[in-house]
Image 1 (spheres, rainbow, N blue to C red):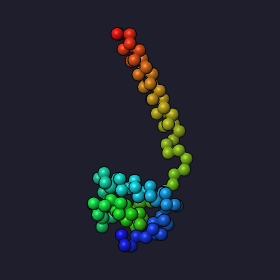
Image 2: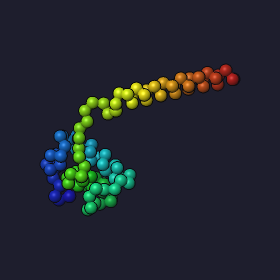
Image 3: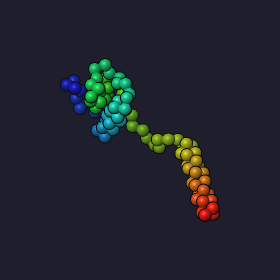
Length: 99
């Protein structure tokens, strides 16, 4: 941790917000069981491990522009949701008729 400076880490990301998000996401992955990409890591502190990975360029930080998913997949998932809503509405009508 002594060799990692904030200036060195800010050179890897465009701003502090992206850096903080990348560190938090990677530390969550490590705490959930992902193997670290550096040899000298502390299993009790995933945040320091994420900092070390970013400092030695094992993790690249990119800012995505535009929507996260393609429009086709968004439309497809909305269509599936619409079908589920219709089927749920039919089930509630059927239940009321049986009573």
